[in-house]
Length: 360
Image (cartoon, rainbow, N blue to C red):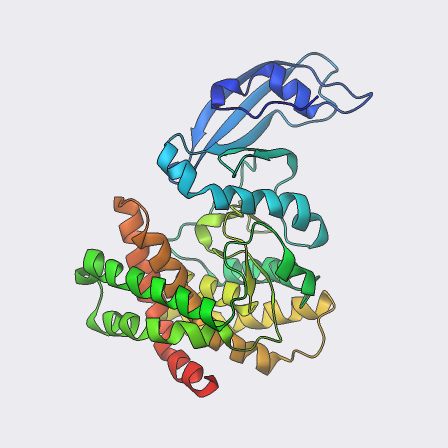
């Protein structure tokens, strides 16, 4: 019998947990569960669950979990339904076929258009969430780059990616690329209207130059592609306290495209421009070396560096779309300013717009 999907966290009961955690001939009996809110809940509702089991009935399971449910706001729930489908696709069709470190998924289910959704996974404490505003160190950047190669490398250029359901941004044809470019133009205008007074003039000029370049950029280098996290940034990374490992979360923006888009987005948004020169190439080299370890061939380091330069437009693409079409918050505004300031500097430093023009 199908286990109902919880409508609210109140439905994540001891009985429900016992049902979804049990296996044939391996019953689990949860005696009690408590819930605590985690995060801000802008696109979903996440809770930490502390559970107690009946003696001898825990099957070696942890004493705490994280559970992710749709937003309590019906409007947000409807708007983000594709993101819930994306996360479901990742954990049911992708996670076991790649090598990126992710939380153990104990149960996931979805119904309808995605407005009914639940994900039960390991609670990652004592891991520490990256801080988008503070940025990252060299060691954190290299660790994140290596982990990212575990997403891209094992199924590099796998044609099956183009048929994967739940993709938020696929590889577009010419008309699709232009349609997305038009939307990005609106997002750029909205972003400048809302926070342009907090951005240097050079960054505003760079943003205005981005929208016309998006269509040819999306169509560039079609022979190299992979599934993308789509929003690979510090807030979506959980670091071990000693920085010996990292775990990647929030798979609501799966995309398919040039693999370096994830890397460029991470590096450009996570490192202040003055520090990037001392960190960036170490991250690119670590990423490339790990790609080779996962079996990628015919992609040398210089090509990887060039793809990294080209991929910088992922920053304004994702940042302006996410910012322009979401509710304003104080931290959200500050985060958009930080990411765009860093990203626009990287676009100029790498001559990305000239590179796109040369490929068009």
